[in-house]
Image (cartoon, rainbow, N blue to C red; front, top):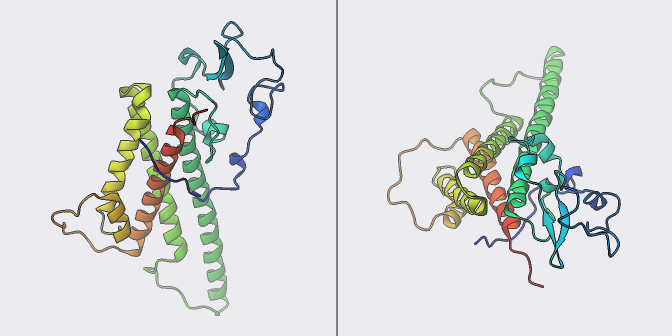
Length: 263
């Protein structure tokens, strides 16, 4: 269903990308996250699964089991999900991962990306404040001419791009939640992938969209071009933030939905 190549989404090296595999099943796990020892596999008669899930054996087959829905909060803590192992770019889903876990991985990644964009906004705002304080100091010393108030600085454009990306991740989280309420778990990621494609097609119709983006997103040229305002540096920055977020989300949807390799 979802064929695409993985690419670096710009967040490698982040502390959330690495996690301790030994934490998958407690202290007694091997490098793959499975219980150590030939007789230490959990069975379906053991204690109930934790909120993180567990490995179980059934009919001699080792698979991952998620806890019952009754044990889960109705509204997940998105910050906690963003900091969980499931939010990693190269998420290592366990063998036999059920649809619910794949959906959780998608949601956790979206929450993590939104958090990163919000943190990036804070960095840009701090840098812009320092820059303006420096300009005021130089003006007070008569070393600098005042900048026209209508001029948009590169930091203003960077802030607009980060704000647009954060808003887009919020939009995607809401769409995923809505699909979870109306579609069966086995269909949620399929429907979400289709929703992402529709969103990309909408962005491709914007006047800010470059020709290569339009060619990749649209099956045919639009019949008539609407009269739209000419792109501005600010609107172009906002479009980049939205487009980058949605295309990155589609790549991740492909990743978490990929079928397991045949043994």
